[in-house]
Image (cartoon, rainbow, N blue to C red; front, side, top):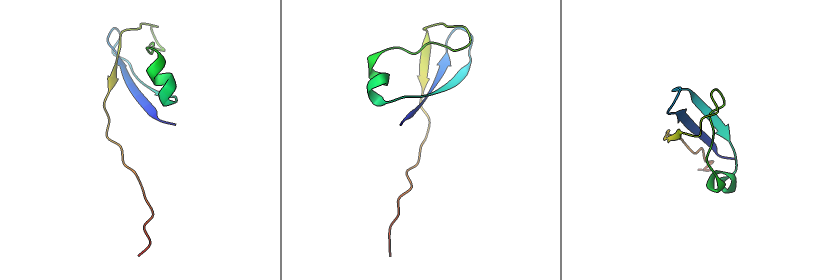
Length: 54
């Protein structure tokens, strides 16, 4: 499942949420610290590891 990172616009806390793409599309995330719904998704780099036989 994808991992999404957020930052609360109110208390500035960074947090990570693991949820499916359909859950992500359904609604807004709330801050686990202050419960504010004013959060911004943080774009983070990722990598994909593949196996390639030579």
